[in-house]
Amino acid sequence: MTARLLTAEEVALQLGIELDTLYRYARSGRIRGLKIGNLWRFYEADVDAFIQSRRYQPSGAPPSNVALLTEVLTTGGPRRGGVVCGALRHGYEELDRSATRLAAALRRDGVAAGDRVVVILPTCSEFLVACFAIWKLGAIAVPEFVGIRPPNLRHMLADARPSALIVDDPVAQRIDELRAELPLDGVRAILIKDATFTLSGLESVAVHALNELLDDAALEKGFKPVHARPDQVVLLNYTSGSTGTPKGVMHTHESVLAGAEFTRRFHAVGPADSIVIPLPLHHGLAFRQLFAYALSDATIILATDIYQALRLLKDYHPTALVLVPAAANLVLDHFAAVLGEASRHLRYVEVGSAAFAPERLARFRELLPHTKVHLPYGLTEARVGFLERGSEGAYNRIATVATGLELFVIDADGQRVASGQTGNIVLRGQGLMLGYWGQSGEHFEHYKANGFATGDLGRLMPDGSVELLGRMDDMLKIGGRKVNPTEVEVALARHPAVADSAVAAVSDPNGVFETQLHAFVVLHRGAAATEEELLSFARQQIEPYKLPGKIHFRTSLPKSAVGKILRSELARERAAASVTPVSGTRNSQEEEGQR
Image 1: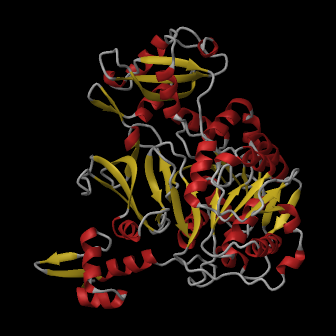
Image 2 (image 1 turned 45 degrees about the vertical axis):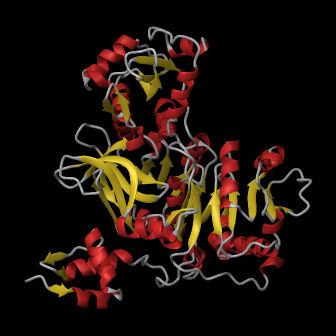
C-alpha cells in the first residue's frame, strides 16, 4: 500500500494552523516533512502521529476538555481506593470533601486563581488534600521538603511570592524563628497542621489550625471550584539548586496528568493495587506514583521512613513499593529477609533519583525473584522513562520513554548527533514543563517547538536508544581531559568492600593541574580496603587519566532528601580543609575522626 503524501496547505487546514507555523514546525523537526525543491510534503501517517502527540486522553477518564485534576479524580461514580496514613484510611471522596473545605477557607482569606500556595508538609494525607484544594481554586501549588534549608526557603518565598502557606508545626516554628529574614509580604494566610503554638506579630496574616478547617463541614456550603484549562499552571516545583540557583519549574494540568498516566499504563495499575511510598511527597518520584494511583482508584499507603515502610509491607501486602537507592541499600544490608518475603506480593519496585550500583541492583533483584525492579529516569522538568543495562554494564540506557514525549541528542550547534556520538539530551512533547517561573512566553514557545535541553550528557546508540552519561555540568576537566564522575563512581562501587562512592573535582593550585580528581568512599560495615587497593581495582576498568588523585574514606556521604549525592558539598569541604588528607590505609572512621 502506497503511503499518502499531503500538501502543506492540506496539512495546515487539517491542523488548524497557519502555513508559516507549519513550516516552522517542519524545519524544527516537530512534525516530519519532506522538502522537495521549494515545496513541503507530509506523509499522512506523520500528520496523524503529530496530532496524537498533542492529544491527552486518559483511558477511562472524562473528555480531554476536563483538565482540573480534582475533576478527573472525583468523576465516574463511587470509588473504593484511598490513602492509608498511620492508623487512618481516607477514601478519595472523603479527601475531596476535605479539599473543598480547605479551598473555601483559602478563598475566604483572599487566595484567588493564579495565586501561589506553598505546601511544606511531611508524608501525610493532608498533602494530597492541600493540592486538591489549591487546584479547586485555580491556584498554583508550590510543594517543598520539610527540611528545606533557610537560604532555599528565602529564595523560594522571594521568587514565588505566595499568598498562603500550608505547613506543619515544626516548619511553622522555623518560620517564626526566621521571620525577620523571610520575605512574607503578600502572605494572607498560614495554615498549620497539628499546631501546638500560635504565631504572633503577624497582624495582616490569618493563622489557622489546618485540622480544624478540615473538620468544618459548614465550609463546603455554596463552594464552586474553578474549571481550569489543560495548559493552566497548577504546580511550581523548585529544583534542588545543585547546579545553580533553584528554579521554579511550572507544570500544567496536562503535563501532570501525562506523567501520571504514563506511570499508570507502564505499571498496569488498577483498583486492586496498592503502593507503599516512604518518600517526601513533593518529589517527582513520589508525586508521579501518587497521582497514578489516585487516577486508578488504587490504594496509597504512606510511610514516614523506610523502617515504617518495612512494617507496612508485612501488614498490608502491597503490590508496589518506591524507594531511593540509599533506602534500597539499607534494606539489602539489614532487612533482606523482609524484602524476600515481600516478593510474594510485590508486582514491582521503583528505585530512583540517583545511581544504583549494578552489583547492588543484581542482589536486589535476587531477593525479589517474582518482582519487577525498575530504575526510572526523570527530571523536575519532565517525567521521562526507565533505564536498562547499557553497553558498559551500568544501568544507564534510556530504554522506555513516556508516550508522547520525544527524546533525542544534539551537539553544540543544535544538530542531532550521529550514532556513537555524544551531546545534550533534549525532551519535547507531553509531560514536559511549560517553562521556568518568571520566563517570558517566548521561552514557552521555544520549549514547545524545539524541546528542552536537559543538561544531561547522552550517547546515541546504533539501535536508536540513548545512554545516559551524567550531567554535562558534572563533567570534570582534569588536565585538559573530560572525566565523567559517574563512570569513576561506578568503577569504585564494583569493589566488594565499597558501599557508596562519589567523585568531585577539588581545587589544587599548588599541584600540576588546576583541579584534581578526589574520590570519597564509604566501606561496608566490617569491610577493609586501602587507597592503593581501590586505585588498582579501578585501573582495570577505566583509563589512567580518570583515576582519582586521592581517595578519602568516610562513614557517610552528604545527600539530598531523596538520596542524591551532593558532590558540590564534598568539593567545597575538601577545598576548605586545613589539614592534609589522611593516607588511604586508614579506615573511614579514622579519617573522619581526625577532622
